[in-house]
Amino acid sequence: MSKKRVLVVPLDWGLGHATRCTPIINALQELNCDVFIAGAGSSLKLLRKAFPELKTFELPPYNPAYPSSGSMMLKLLLQSGKFVRVVRVEHRITEKLVEQYNIDFIISDNRYGCYSLKVPSVFITHQLTLPSAKGWKWLGALANSVAKRFVKKFTTCWVPDFPGSVLSGKLSVGADERTHFIGPLSRLNNLGEIEIRYKLLVLLSGPEPQRSIFETIVMQQLESTDFHTMVVRGVVEDKSLNHSDKIVTVNYLDGTELSEAIAQSELVLCRSGYSTIMDLARLQKKAIFVPTPGQTEQEYLAEKVSQAGIAYYMSQKDFVLDEAMRQSENYKGFADYSFDDSLLRKHLTDFLHSIN
Image (cartoon, rainbow, N blue to C red; front, side, top):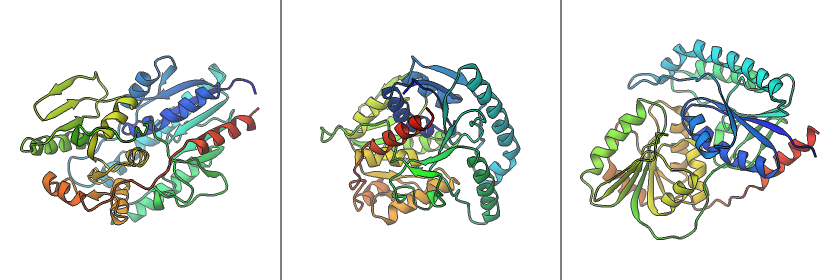
């Protein structure tokens, strides 16, 4: 099989799409592919740090503006024109990159315009059915209709979950014959039983201003605690450290460092984003979830794992750290998942052979 040139493109809404592309890039390199990366914002910055040897390209950012209060659905609806323009521009750029760099195929993680009419393309998503907020079902139906039209422009669709939608639940309902489950994706490694250093690991992530709002809430409540905590701010800048007697604060950690930090922590406090859930399932940890306000996907996933007895969740507006930690003792954590990358490698290998 001749060496293939692959363009990998993650969405720039948060860091999760970039982190879950990391095992894909690693697998492609192991399969002797030349990998190119395109993206925007902190998502692209993270992959540049992880793969400094790879050629990267800038795409227009989506830059979704999230409200500090009020309706998120209304806020996103008002930005829909901007999002459509980004999809059109990223498609034109993608076609130029395919031609200029002789790309053999594309893997797009939730960037709807990153397909080509010249080469095969893969669309990666766990959201085959987009959830809608109460009172906005008409908007959810419209968004699902538009999304499905775009997905059909790709050669195939891959869902990062176990077959049967074990982790994603109703979000991945709607699979057809073009859809394949490739197993959960995580850049982290399960280090097994190692010494616990932190009672709590706080992983801050997601769009502003909600990331900063939640950081302020958590840091204020941590001041009155007497246990050791690590806080990862989710800001892809330098890895500056801030130590106090009880709290270690860092801007971000790479995959190896984060695997170690999670393994050394008794409990993880974080958003209920799907990429985070895949990471926690791989590392088999206990967690407290605080969904980003108004993000219906995170609210659904938090409720799903809570009903399954896996993790406690609490809304941001009602968040009380002491109470959340007490309640978390009644949940079993992500203890029942067996990970390997065989499904991912199988689908990558099959796809590579199909385009010979």
